[in-house]
Length: 204
Image (cartoon, rainbow, N blue to C red):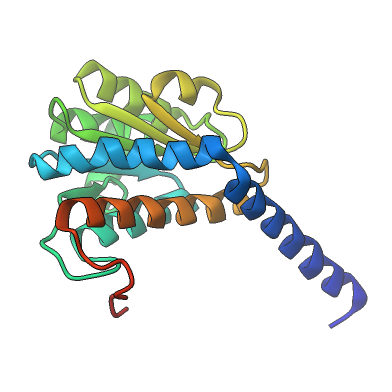
């Protein structure tokens, strides 16, 4: 490993640690985590659904988070109704081909969402057109809107009932904060609905 590669590794790790430290120290971000849990818990407990969407790495985060709800995170429990709108290739390609990529999440929200469901939008920039259109669609249907984004929420912040802004402007670091936040939210919802022991790890 040459010096430039060592420097790249050191710089990236330092940036990641600084962002996580900012997350730890931020009362606003802790309050955002609680607000997300306060929103999702009663919806799922009442039989409503959580829909999640994002592009690229954020699509992976959407699927990861849905998996924690439908399967389990810290302990065994009944499955919870969470859907990643990023997984059905036939739906995605049909909408993309027939209506345009900017509508791939919007039409799913309109087709699947019902009043008092929850839609969690993930966009590191806060500017993804397909995510913004889905948020607008959700609001038009009385669906509660949540958002994960970067340091500046922009238009996304205006469309979300609650938004979590990761303390970074670098996409990869923002995504690291998002998955930490997702695990915290999933863990809180599990505890609140099922009252399980938070120290019991689920097998992976």
